[in-house]
Length: 345
Ligand code: EPU
Image (cartoon, rainbow, N blue to C red; front, top):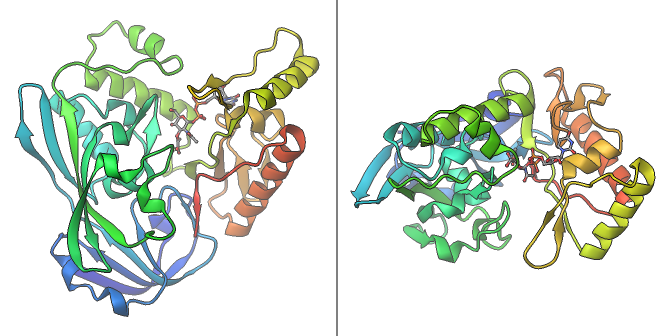
């Protein structure tokens, strides 16, 4: 069924809680509905949203917003170990994680409690605690709005990178609508506990290692660090973690040691190609932004990589002004240009 609305309020459809409207809003609940939508005739631009958890609406949307309610989770093949599961694009990603953990299937437990829906997860290559969704995706099924046909892409063809995929390529952006995703999960235990203090946190429970246990531990960690969208609006991490050269990192480390003491260690991850990933959260904290409020917007006190709609009344301009000032101070102190992870609409 296709539902169409005009001048639709989007406040509850973006986790930042921006009070904006869409000129036209279309929601559909089956793969077949896509064939009936006249894409040529829709008010432009066209934006397909998932859970609206990685978007910053900067104004009312002048075109058409589409949303999928394709909601199914179905085991399509079951080998001795590998289990293929087909999941509709409109399924809340964490509902899928919950289902998999309860089925005793390994693969998505580290991705627990990330906001958003399955369709968007395959576009954005969501990731957390050392796992990216591309690690478990097998095939992404789509509707091609240009050639008006159903197509599918194997994971190898989607050029997945850090929060990136071929779907984000400016030349084809918006052309393909994800209808469902086939994930390859596993019955054999495959715990991935190398990220941060995850291993200690899991071992501290003393319980048997299951996907459900890891899921519970991750949900607890995330609840401690990240704001609950229903309580305080945000879009999760606002910036990407920058990757810099080893020389550049050496300069930053020398400056930090001069400022904070010779024993001070700058958090970082050495990447295989010799470059260095430095947590944006650390840099934002060093620039004094942690917990800072600016009008109705603020830098979250428990995780400064997150900009929050502190009062629930923030205007897009307030978020953008804070973003600009953070970018400028990071450039001045570290000579690094931050890039937002959140998509500005
Ligand atoms: N840190 C500080 N000060 C702070 C907080 C953190 O210096 O106040 C430093 C610490 O050194 C910490 C490091 O930042 O070890 C990294 O923090 P964390 O492990 O929380 O991860 P992150 O880099 O901030 C990324 C993803 C998150 C994902 C977590 C966990 C990005 C942009 N963000 O955050 O994804 O949940 O790792 O895997 O890659 C999201 O995309 O919206 C998101 C929340």
